[in-house]
Image (cartoon, rainbow, N blue to C red; front, top):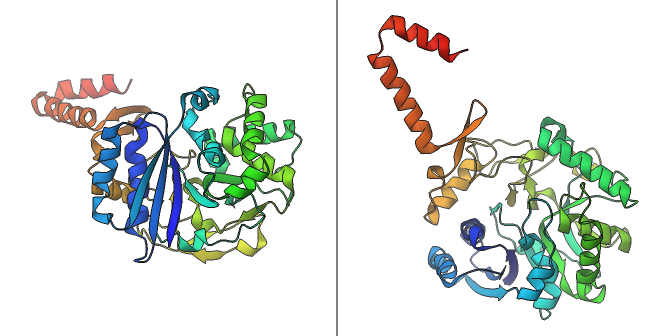
Length: 351
């Protein structure tokens, strides 16, 4: 089976996208092949060569097609919040891939830990898409940033007249989606989504442009317009209870809303490094929620993250070299400073 997969990113996210593809290929069955559609506006020939070189050991298991976003399409996409325009490229799929009936969309901040055939074979006939619900036990409130995002989401959906806490209107995450392209074309999803984005782009509570739009469109189309996937296809770190020491551990997630998933155990297929916690390539979070596993995959594509990420110390972020220099400086001070001066130094430092 050859599975079409769409990734959308810019030249600055080439390595992250490559990690996604590498992990998918490494954990695919022998009979599974992937055709990657790379949606981008600024990918260079060097970027594409890096990707092909990194994935070369799987040369019989994949093909790559670079789908260039035209200048007019790029300029027409609004820039909202901290997200780049690339997050909305998936909405252009009906226009750019009219010959593809359905495809998988994957964000570039994930790891694929198992074969994707079962996910792709999900029946989405007469459905807009399949995705995972975010209505889980509210650990948002353990994180101040996520707490604000959660509050803004409530406020925004109240503005558009939708109760996302209603048991029939589950809010879905757009980071992993099985998209029915035929449905999107028939229902004018691209035009409707961009109309919605333009209408609310100035709203301060509009945090996730494509995700909010796709949720609203699906709810407007009726309760049966989506398929809710098992959470194993989109394990979001800030929602999960997991044993980070074992990359293939079983995960138990308890939901307050979906009775059939309460205390359901499963092995994760996709790990999603969502915004509730720092991305693994930005800040060091050793032994936390699959970050170490992400580092291992990064090494496999010759991406040395640890020399570039920053470490949190006393409320400030430092590079690895800066941390080493600080430690060396402290050791040097202790080695050469008389005991009396050392006491004064510590007293002054703690003020």
